Length: 78
Figure (cartoon, rainbow, N blue to C red):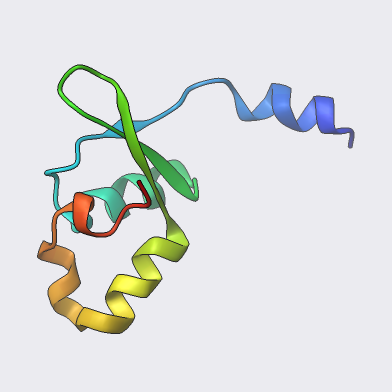
């Protein structure tokens, strides 16, 4: 399989989420769409950060189960 074939199969959609959404919602979206990161946008649809699986792991390691209720803005990479 070529890189071109992978990119064509993957599609071009970029999923976004607001910074005030709960981390649990971000995790649900990542799992549902089988992706590893979300672009975080503000109300004007301007990019304010990215939330990756690594960001989530760091917060869960620090906060445990309480991390699910934390706002995305507290976990994302600006």
